[in-house]
Each structure stands twice: as structure tokens, then as C-alpha cells.
Length: 303
Image (cartoon, rainbow, N blue to C red; front, top):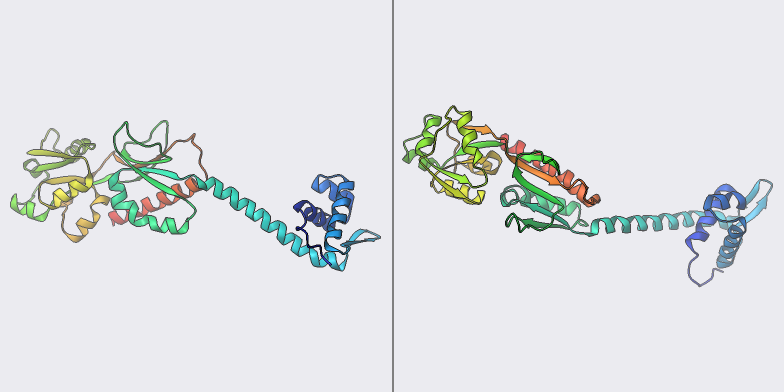
């Protein structure tokens, strides 16, 4: 009758399986890195624990008894489950530290937040903490940064995401009030709604449409694209905005793209990482997902 004491050690189970597989205590000793004497003692202790012999001698070595044959798959399953548990703990430890994702506000509002639930549901073990831009000197340390800029960055691993396709947008009522928009030069009679971090957009637009040196009638600068988009919808001026950020308004007609005017900018939205930072499987999974979703987002905006 089996002992009511604690279950046998993993060492005893590994020794038992090695002897069952190899048919020899000497060979098993080499496989499990123990002495032959220690292997024999482990088998003896296991047999005493179970109250029955697990092996018998045969002309070719040790052979499992009927009890040993019955016990073997359970021992294998026990070892497999314990190894799986150890791997799971190791993975959870690697994933345990929250991933800090720093991103510009518009990328969260127009792209990430509505898509992120699918990632969270697929990876409930990955804790992602979102941080936002405050100032150049007041940003939290992050694992992943999503920023607007001109890549690549020499000291960062960088992946382009989206946003290079820029469109001129305006409210239909504004264009009607201003007498329509018949040529690119008409932008000079408009108020330009400009992101303070994207002053190059005007130069890129005028260069692309043969208007070098042109200036708008008036410029109003904002710190957030969400405010620029709302201002454009309210008819306060025209804006140069990444097409992917205004795709919904263009589709609904609340904003229009007069004469299909736009350009391909050198500025885009990029994901950057510290190439020397610690990167567990959680970061790798998130980075891969972000790149796939970004490609889909840009393709949808271009369709």
C-alpha cells in the first residue's frame, strides 16, 4: 500500500524514468548526473514509498515490472507538468514588469485606443502602462516611444508606423464662405491651423505645389492635433494633417480635401526603442502587434 507521506521527489521520478528508459542503473546514473549508488538508493526509496517493486532483473538488464509499467506514464506526466509550471513562472516573471508605452496624444486617440482591447484580450498577462507627453524634461522613463519625427534615430531602434501622407483639409462651409478653392495658391488667402511641432508642413506643401515663398493670410498654432481637427471642422481655418488622423472626417464629409491637395512628408509617426534595454517576450509581442496594426491603419486611410 502506498505511503501516506509526501509525494516522491522529482529526483526520484527522474531517476525512475531514466532507469526505465535505459534499463541500467549505471547508464541512468550518467544520464541524471548521479552516482550509481545514489540511483539505486533513489529507486529503493521510491519502491518503499509505493510499497511495490518497480523493476526486476532480466538477461538484458533491469526491466519494469507491471507496477513500473503502470507508474511510468504518471511519472512522465508529473515531470512534464512541473516543467511546464516552471516555464510558466519564468515567462510570467519576464512579463511581470509593466511595459511603459509613451505616445503622442493623437496616436492614442485616433489609432491605438480603439484597437488595444484586442491585444489586451489576447495577452492578459502583459501589463501595459500608457504615459503621455508633458514636456521635454518631464517624461517618464519608457520602454517604447511613439513619436512624430524624422527617422531614423542613431541611438534608438526605430520603426516607421504611419503618417507621412499629409492632406490639406477644411470644412465645406469655410470653402464656400471663402469663395471656393480653385488652385493651390488659394491657400494664401486662408488661415492656417498649424501644429507647433510641425512647422515644416507648410514648407513641404508649398514646395510640392510650386508655391515656394508663399505665406498664409494668418497662422494659428496649436499643441494638439485633436484641437486642430476640431478647429478645422468649426471653420476656423485650413489644416495640413496626416491623412490617417482625419480619415473619419473625410469619409463623413465634415472635412474635405480640396483638389485632393497633399504631399508625402519627411515627418511621420515612429516607434522607437532602446536597443540596449532589457526586452522580454511581452515587449516583443507588443512591438510586433503595434507594427501590424500601424500598417493596417495607414492602408485603411489610403484606401
